[in-house]
Image (cartoon, rainbow, N blue to C red):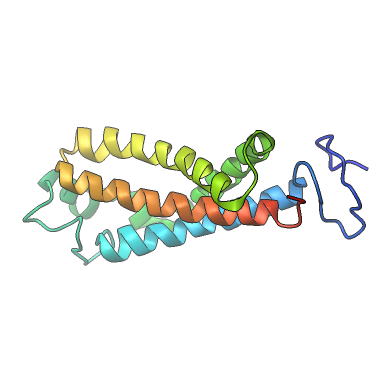
Length: 178
């Protein structure tokens, strides 16, 4: 019996993979769960602490420390970022990214050491690198975000990447033999 990817499902009478690659359904569920964790973590960090929401200032939008360009792009210049104007569209996109990371994880997990922490940290690094590159090229490079706030943003992205990776790996590997 195979799961569609060619891996054997040892004793999978209840639909759970007990070894090998997770089923496609579990992979998709893991990606959705990871994407939701990423959304929640970015809301808690960038939204609540950072102040990216309308009418809020926060750590990243204090006019005394932040570049006026960053504040203008996020808060004043039309059109405002899509996450402000049509958040559902961007949030759905983040869930799709979660599914993509789950598919990536599914392909590399057999080569990684077993264990939630070992796998989650590796996946979190892959997720964080994409966010870090965008932070570096966008707010830091183009909008002249101060280095200290860029480092804070990188920390916020790390929280989101870890949240996504841990939940994704937990869901993907649940029921798999260690």
